[in-house]
Structure formats: structure tokens, C-alpha cells
Length: 230
Image: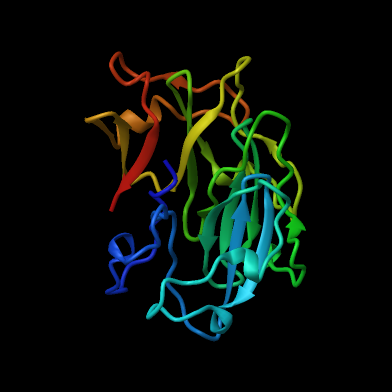
């Protein structure tokens, strides 16, 4: 479920079909220039950074990140992230808390990373999403509820737990999030089914930060992913 994080266009590399070592598979990729720094997020919410120029070339099978970084034992990386340092992004955990920040706040020289997103017990960090030039955030819960909130309601933080994005019941979690502008179309993915929401349909799910959202139609209450049709 973590291979959906392909954000940038314009690269002619088919990242998902490169050669991988036996047992390895595609997770995440990003597009940038060799003079930039590249960031990594682990499941506990720690961020890491490396200069792109220090990474091995694509001619080989790559090197394990553990040769350059030192996450805690048994902790997995969930994402690679690359954008301009001043660009806005959203950081959030599956427990329903998150905040707005800038890409440069991910930066660190520590091999063990830095405490960036505080992740409550029994939850995990969600992949970071760009908020640059976006006005709203859509949040999908495991109970099949959707909430769309105005990004101006989110706190701007350098790190931490953030504020409550959506009101969750016991054992309920955030499954997926996306940023959007209200002239765009949200695709709600439930297995092979896709529900498209746009215009007035989106208004039904709009609410204040920390509210409950609205139950999706029958047949979409087991949805697990939100996409934006661009």
C-alpha cells in the first residue's frame, strides 16, 4: 500500500520497473537535481536527509539506506521526498493529528534522523503530501468517512504531533489524505470501484477541522485511497 507515492512529472525513468534485488520491490520515488538534498521519512515520524549527489547511480542495484543512515532497529522507511525547501507540505499520523510545514524542516545531518512528526502509540506516520498552491485537505477514515477541511485551519509547526484533523472513534484511523483545490475531482478508490466527487458533491464533505466528516455512499465505506484527477 505504499507504492502510490509518485508525485512529480517530467522524468522519463520508469521507476516501478527498474531492476531490483531478489526480494526487493518498488516503494517510492522522487525527481530532482543533483545539487538538492533528498529527504526520507520513517514509520515513527523521524526524518532524514542526504545530498542527492551522495546516492549511487542507477547503473547498479543501489545501496541500502542503512549504509548511510541509522534508523532505530526494526524501523522501516516509508517515503522518499523531494521538493523546494520553501514548499509547503502536510505531515500527519494515522491517529488523526497533523500540521502544515515547509520542506526545509525535514532537514538534518544526523544519521539517526530527527524527531519530526510525533506519532502516538498504535499509529504510524502517513506519507507526506505537498500543500503548495493548494487550499484544502481531504481525509479518509477507516470507517468510510470523508472530511474536507480548509488548509488555513491547520497550524504551521516545525515539528510535533500537530492538531486534530478529524474526530476518530476507537480503533478508527486515517487511511489516506490528499490536498486539493475545490475545482478538482477527488477519486475515492474502493477495490475496483472509483467514486468521483466534484463541485457540489465536495460541499457535502466539507467541515471544520476536528469534526467527524460525512459517511461515503454505500459500497464505498471500505474505500482505502483518495486520488486527485489532474
